[in-house]
Length: 158
Image (cartoon, rainbow, N blue to C red; front, side):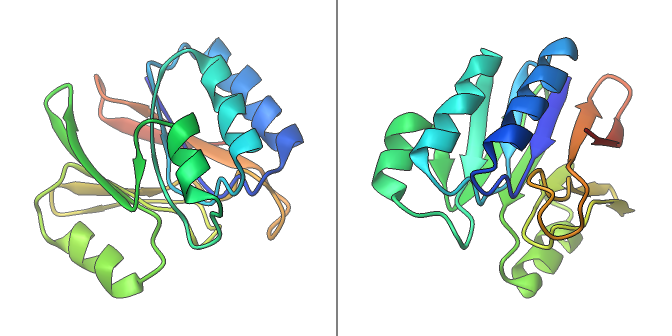
């Protein structure tokens, strides 16, 4: 099981709730699609005890220190996991997001930025935006669980 979050925006209460929820789901990988914001928030995710792959968002500061806290963080992540090709991008530029999804190069394109949860399939690509973990804009703290064995994604409100 893969946990997918975005836009946590230093909301430690939401991060702690997500950690508690995701621990119960025994996730093996966490993907964070940006806007963690500060290193003190980033280190909280390490409590999950799993691999973390993250990308920078448009509000992330202290990038140098964030890199020290999360080894696998960059502006864009492209990788293969369990035979599936992933792209993770914050989503700050709509044209790039659309191009990634429509390219057909990826099984999964993970984005954030809009704070709106969405799962859509375009061709062979599943585009997942887990919504906002922080709950600041729409009042809902959401994340996504991705089951690669069944190829199913589900938005969860915590």
